[in-house]
Image 1 (spheres, rainbow, N blue to C red):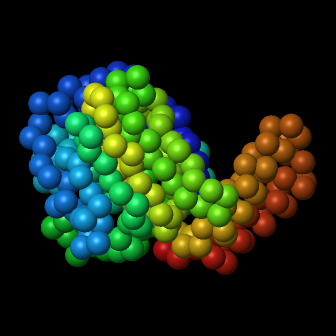
Image 2 (image 1 turned 180 degrees about the vertical axis):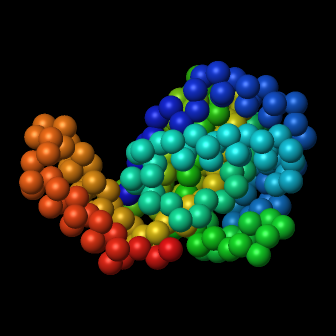
Length: 226
Ligand code: NI
């Protein structure tokens, strides 16, 4: 499933984030790349321990906790502390698949990356190129969203970022270990959840809604790993 989640951060939060990030120190993005993807990766990042990154990352995590759409779609178990990257002057990230397992820095906690997330922090008119292109069975999807919006996609997909030929593309990126490892099962649960919510709006308290809600939770109980 490829899902766009609008307005994770408000316009004000984005402005504040950009102000702080623009002043921060940026390093070569290869620091968090795996052996293979380091060859394809050409961008800049905020160091994982940078206080600005930590503060903004926490803000993003708090916003996601309050996003019913994110919770329903990702069914998150663990979320990697958000990182920040910037592409400018022709920088790009060639085709790759993200590492399967990530260790949260300075902790023994490992995350299986079921889902990848990119939260855009630059407006599309601020830069040329920089589309995030994600491959699935239906082709290649090109994603370039307004600042504050996020895209969620299976971390198992091949993806790349096109060269940024004008301006700068600033974004946050991170991974989610879902309670539901399998993307197709997670997608079915999400569709069921949305359908129940829709029915509940149209025919509140209908017995079938109560039954279907039970089915949803029993499926979650059947498949969830926590
Ligand atoms: Ni990637």
